[in-house]
Length: 94
Image (tube, rainbow, N blue to C red; front, top):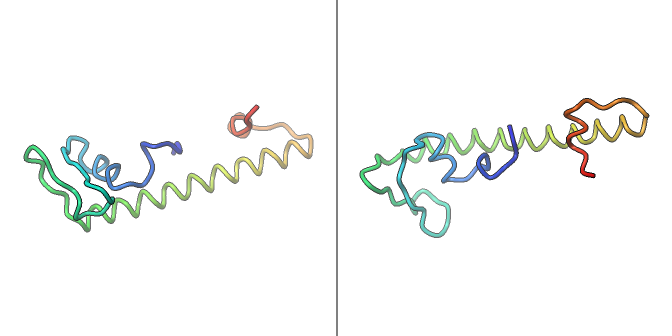
């Protein structure tokens, strides 16, 4: 999983994952009650959105941890003078 805005666990991203064609506006705070469904879009039930958000949060947290683990592995290998994998090398900012 890439760590970018499209994958961030937000209400809008959860809606798009469930229904990419959904038309909606979220007014102010990102809570279910602030979703205004547009153009005849069938509202997604709150429990379905909450489940998707929870799934997305877990994926996000796992991706963040995997990236941290990869950076730690790359650092340890550099210190030990070992070769890095391409994935580890990609974590290094030059």
